[in-house]
Length: 531
Image (tube, rainbow, N blue to C red; front, side):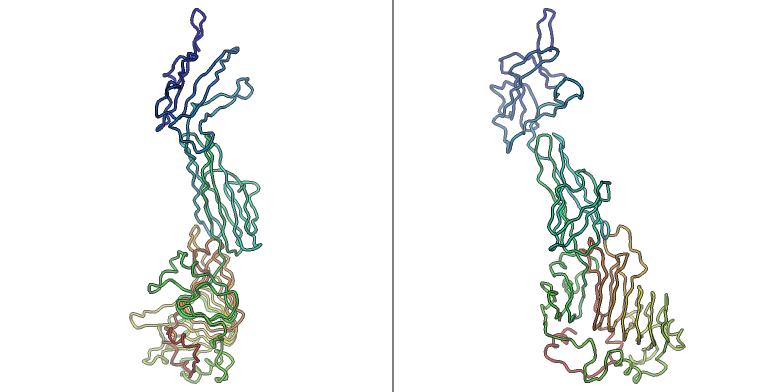
């Protein structure tokens, strides 16, 4: 507003500080927003430019005390394409405590585009992960953001979701089945660190995120999804029999899993095994073996010797055969309970009194003459032992293995070693001493190299969430427990136990001395074909 010396008041409208035009009632002059760059310019609203999308026209104005009240007439023009209402906007503010009303902070604008939003999830550990939320609007600015989170769990299963950073109160929410919470702790942008209770679950969490700008454009929601998975076991090559069935993943799961421990084997995806025989109900995956072979009525004889051999267990049969077929110099005895730690099997044999055994076994031409047997009367514990001989451990009690149980040989130089464990009672594979790698999202593996034949196998949980890799085989007839768990977040990447079949090594080393006449029925034909 400007007042002349004669007391005549003149009013002006401004596009910017240096561009203005006098307001003359009734002449049709106003301001237009043009398409392309949303530039505001003066125009005649009765004959606007062809590329104008909207106009603001000071239809009337009056003075009231120290204020000028303008009646702005707003309109949309032919070049506009408005998919919904409220596209012409201005950001206004009020001065607290002042009788000034709402004051526009900026020019009137046209904004047809919603904010650009993103939600990216990154795994951190066995139970924790980050979600990075972003929302940007270069024209209008972001007015509001909103998060919601949903669970997709089986039945009435539940799990606890926690927000670790930034701090909130309360910082935990319980989810049951398929449940959505419209407020997921906060609505802040930036990186949020979450964790879940390590409860074995198959399902997922969805984190939905959207934003609205000052022009009331609402962005379509984006979703970051966390997959939850129970621990699972896998075998590579060889055959699998389970009289009571096993809890197992589907082949579709395996094909989605990315892990350096699950690379293709001979241009094949890693199936559960070559052949499966599982009698338990509700345990077969959608595609359980490479050749889709499954017989529920078959009972495998690997659990114990056949009846005609008249031995109660593999331990009893092997004990008798080794006693009669090997020389006394190849056989050593230890009274249990006994523990060997941080040594090689060659050193164990020397400790028990063998002076002639060498690393890689006895020097001899025939395979059975290179072997040695260690009989343990009672319990045996091996902590971090390396197998560098051709050794059969006959244990009349229980066997406890603390990884790493390694193997040292050189097949390229025709030096093949291996340790066969024949255990009358229970074999337990404890957690190793490795604490894992902080921040590493690939599960760390304890390793055991050996062929284990035992009444029962027990694999308790590892508090460090390390998985277990056995290279060799396991034959166990009853009360078996596989309780390793890589964590409900990282189980999606890898099995908690993986068994690589290496039976050819042990048949080469011990097949001659432990051979026996065996007859096969027609159901066992696929087993023979797989060798």
